[in-house]
Length: 198
Ligand code: IMP
Image 1 (spheres, protein in one colour):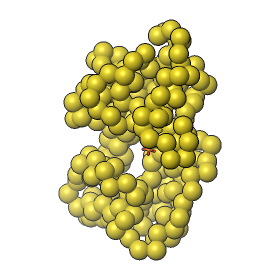
Image 2: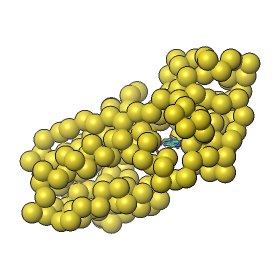
Image 3: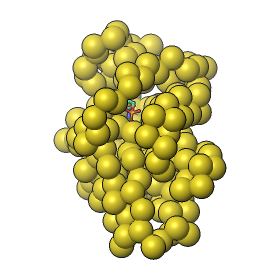
């Protein structure tokens, strides 16, 4: 069998990365920028699950096709889970990755390493070909470093230490990071699920 799956993202890089993960015979992925009359979706939820549901549900209602949406962020224990759902706009509505990292480092100034625990989380919501909703969560635990390390500049990668490898995500080759990351873990569960319909 084969089917089309809408990926509820307008971010081209993210779509390329997701397409790379979800390569399956018979599965055709469609990004939002490949559709017309896409409804505007505001991420107004207070949890990752609320935001992912909001996106997936809006798109499912509009196109009546299988769809998945994700919401991702970094949660720092010492900051009671912040930046959390505000990870992309932590330092303001149009903040750069660097501004967000600077704000995080400032808030953690002087905090000892053992109190700098954090995790990345990706929450996926998937509407299957029968219209049934599934929620999938992927997490990776680590620590926020005291200094930026590595050449990657994506998001919080230079300040997120992945303990099993003793390196920040920005110091790891992309293929390795993608295998152990929150997004990688959630997508591998989704991939197994998708095989049922192929
Ligand atoms: P999104 O929901 O995938 O757009 O992620 C929200 C924000 O979380 C991004 O703007 C990044 O700042 C951060 N983020 C998500 N995934 C990663 C990652 O793998 N590494 C570093 N930062 C990330």
